Image 1 (cartoon, helix red, strand yellow):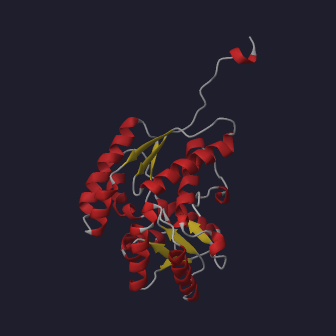
Image 2 (tube, rainbow, N blue to C red; image 1 turned 90 degrees about the vertical axis):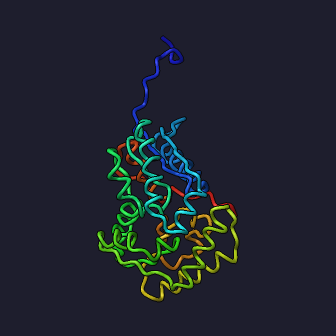
Image 3 (tube, rainbow, N blue to C red; image 1 turned 60 degrees about the vertical axis):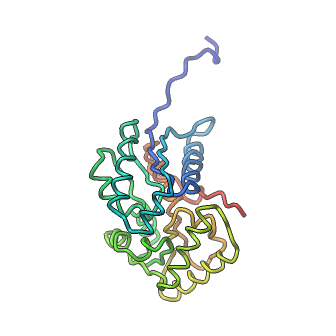
Length: 257
């Protein structure tokens, strides 16, 4: 039998469930980065086996701004159950902010939910760092759910001032989720990161899945940046292929500059 006639054996791979739409910009990058990571390891025509449940961001924006966390939990639990029923082996939620309702989702499903903080914290500790600055939405920077999860890993978060938190949050919701990239906003973020460094931060957590659209390591070489999106996608690739490590430096946003 010639090579062309040889039967093809199905390549084993776990099915990744992406709970996305928070926002669509971040979800598109999860899809791109995960597929790129699978191909980096396997080569050829290999790509990820995955399922995406993408929610209406208008609902999410309203739940977050109005602090309707119970409603957000009910909404996302329903979507996570659909991913599980469709055959996902594990779920990554393509958002930092909505990990506030991760406990409710974890309690409702039987497959693992890979927590974005745990993945990020592992990389921070790997670099010997215990104190980091945080940029993200207001709930991520100011609420206990994010800070307390990092405390479980013996990592301290340093947040910007209340006024700075409002500015950072506004740029995320009014610009980045619409893929509007403004150099003025980039300079604002860099100035805030410099101030966090002056206050003792040894690195910076980009705690919103859109921030890497705006700021890259070359924009702020003073301290290491921990890109939660890239780290989360790296972990999804590792789990799907059942491997131990894929260098995060190869997992990068497609920056629209």
